[in-house]
Image (cartoon, rainbow, N blue to C red; front, side):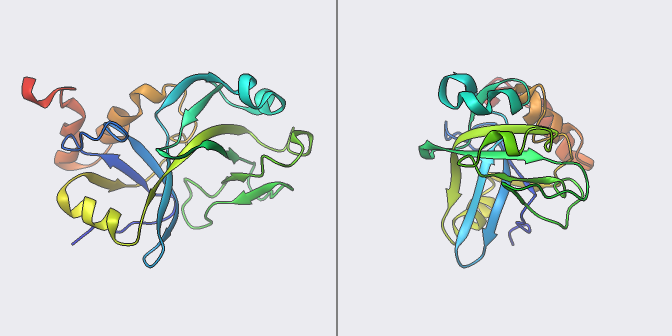
Length: 192
């Protein structure tokens, strides 16, 4: 039986997942509907492209590193932004991701067509993703049953972690029991 998939949860690639799009990936789930599928963004894939090169008006609002993140292999020519706001606020141009989990209660999507000035001073952190990760209905559940993904709780700092390259190990290391040991798996499991 597949683990529960929910908005605000994390998908962490198992060492068995060798698809280059998702290898050692950490995906924040943004939408999930058993009939419609799942959508998320990779939190640990900073690109070489700066936000200033692509969306210069948003550059002053992004959190470091100030680069576009590779959100996933779907629609890589489009951008999606996530931002956190102080508790209780819902500024114009921002839509809450999910109200249930404390890790994402202050997290929402940003309308990149809105003028950045309306959000300046309203958001505390922001990241922009090129593309997203998407699964059709039942596809992600099948991948979890195959052993490709762990489903774990997100923590407030995960989305804007200042060391995204280390996020895969950090998320696994904090898990209870034997799952924490997976963080020590070498990049090439054959070397283990």
